Image (cartoon, rainbow, N blue to C red; front, side, top):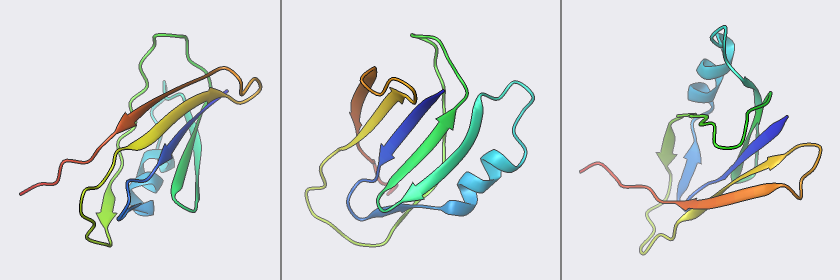
Length: 97
């Protein structure tokens, strides 16, 4: 099992309803098991996947605070049983105009 841990960009929070929709009717082939929201982090539990395999999870965010010069946030993927096996990257939010 792996965990995709998504830290929120400053000024944004996850829309829980959009996450609930992903997990209430998962597809037959879905690797996604559940999610937790704690503070400014969304943890998505994935049954298993191989190195190089893509897992795409899309959920809504809402802006609750205007922040200037917003910095990117971290998405980290790690093995639940061997957390030292980890990879991370930065993401940023491009607002619709």
